Image 1 (cartoon, rainbow, N blue to C red):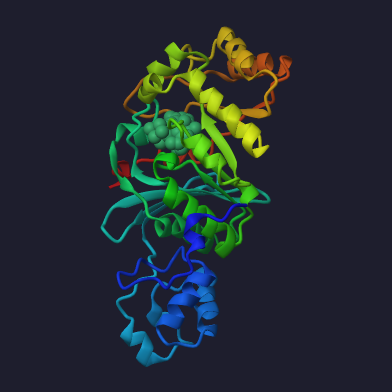
Image 2 (cartoon, protein in one colour):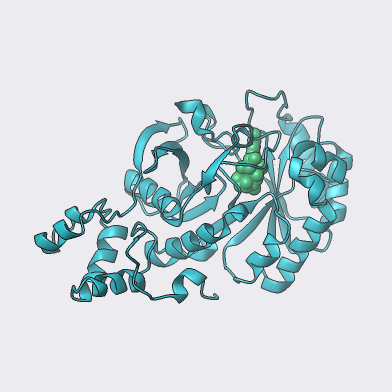
Length: 353
Ligand code: SAH
Ligand code: SF4
């Protein structure tokens, strides 16, 4: 993997010190050294932040008390859990309060062998997709690197189980916050220890950004939210599609595959009578013929503002079979956490306040 910009500088964190969470062992050690502390304390600091869940330097009892007092203003950068809502299927949604009082959502999704965390990359989202609760709520701000990493630690600590997978499918559009997302990917991988192959970055598509992401040669999976098999339909569902035609988006995805050698996952929400007809499946298959890709069909999760419907099981199965008959790898994603509005596309802090 190419080094991300954040790791290239081993300079001490400066006077206007960002929160320590998200910093690498090298960065933490450089800061420790700048504080005239022995360098082995860098390793201790890293362990206390990422393994012991320290929320302030005061808690790190292996450090001298006098020094802890001196750096009392330095923040680790953890959120506080404002609300924890468990759903019947074991999925837990968290509303996390950030240092400026903004609320962001994360979801823990346990399965037999895995614990997946769905993380947010922004407070709200500016893309305004018609079927998405986050999009309907508008945009507030980007999350910082530490605010993304915090979500993974928070869920891991609450479940008392190692997180196995992280998906950037919560609130926000990750490619509009690329620097923080890349920094978080690096920290989740190297500091928390989750393999890059177990990470998925989901995007609705921002012109030029998929190609840019390819430059980093991440092992993470790229998921592209397609949701439509032709331009007209996509314009109807996704406002930004007008400025970023489907043909261009698909071309960027093709470039991504050839530049990285990794396949792309496409996400396609099934909306009854809107994009779930046999002709849509055929169009979709036509676009993706001969690709290294996989299509995730997502049953629509109802939101209150719009009256789209979820197709019935038979119809979803028929759509799937048309794709499979044409040798397109596809599957239907099971929805989790529906009873707590924690399923994909239902994340919106305002709902819960
Ligand atoms: N902004 C990024 C990532 C966050 S959205 C993106 O759009 O890809 C994560 C996933 O949830 C996307 O595939 C999105 O299309 C899907 N989603 C949004 N609203 C939904 C809804 N009401 N029902 C089911 N999936 C939804
Ligand atoms: Fe934003 Fe993704 Fe929701 Fe669209 S689907 S509004 S890009 S979070």
